[in-house]
Image (cartoon, rainbow, N blue to C red; front, side, top):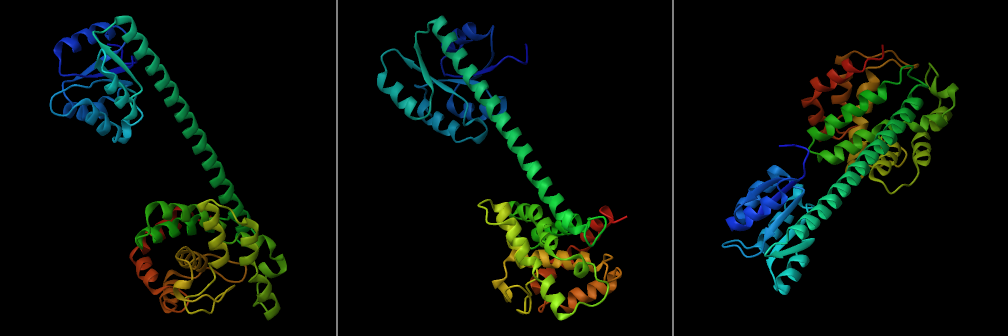
Length: 340
């Protein structure tokens, strides 16, 4: 049988009705059968029909209950259901439509009417499915484009004091690893992964003679460079999407410290948003291991000593415990996204 043909699922306890409908529809459709509601709940998700013909009067689970349960299955919730009723059962027809059925046909069957109703609803269903797929594809393309812009803007800022701009790639992956290891829900961790490359976008507003200075910053220069947090928040702006709101938050707060000695707000402990506390560890860890205009790359032993020594002062101590558990994965990320 042609596998491209639409699928009709007939749910009916009457062999005579099934034989009639199979004879009417068999030339244009692949016909599947379930002889009661329980079997329909098993068969429908596996065959993914284009339309379901559902008899109302069945022993055990009737058509109404079967319809409700079929509509509760996510994969087939949008599949059109046509109720099959006995001529004159007006009340049952109305109840079926209220439960989500799209149409009804009556016994005894009129072949031309059955074909017309089935053809119409299969066509509508396939057209709607095609539109939904196109919308999903376009939405995915827009999301990919937005994420690529975010990553490249983050890398543009990073290029100013790191020639490859790979720091933002490494720290974003480490950020996600740490978030998941600490129990952050997967969707929230993914948003943080996508937003974290923007953490230092405010560097765009920092003068080169300060950002690229090889010596120690004086007090005035230090005051200027600290402004990159608020500049970054202003660049990102206020936006209702979770992604942009998270990007603004980490740009503004990733230099806050657990003991309250950070900037720009001097927030302490859990006053600092969790996302910013996670980014702070990923950012510092990778930055210490990387070459900067003002320092060489630190060895891993010195970096880990700094991280652990500053647990409870710079960093959230519970996050440090999670970080140390995933250290091998973090080092693997650094190997994958090398500056050279």
